[in-house]
Length: 120
Image 1 (cartoon, rainbow, N blue to C red):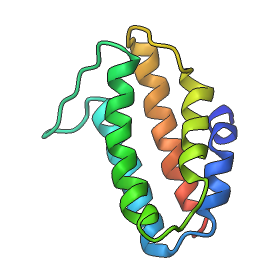
Image 2: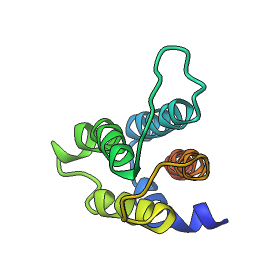
Image 3: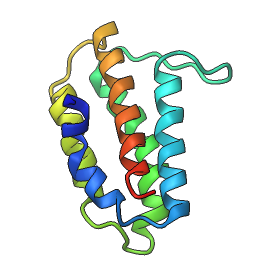
Image 4: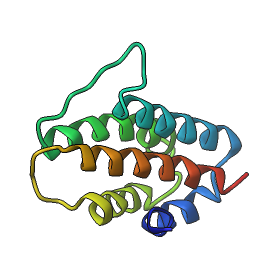
């Protein structure tokens, strides 16, 4: 329930997404969760701290949002809503990236994917 509350603003915006945009949004965050969990056969990432993790998430977000929404001005506020979700769950301070942070990050990415399913 904590994760759903953290992504509530994202879910509200996703309800208005076009079907294709929702599919790309969900697939992107599901892939990110798989990669962070270390379950992807082709991609492996290691994070020393939350700053490195944020750089990875910035790239994920670029795929999930900017390419779909920014160019056409759709889904205003989505970037701020995603940032709020990450700050709520992971905080904004730089600290070592631990197993616990990895687990929370995977759950958060899965919740962001779930938020995209809300409009279906």
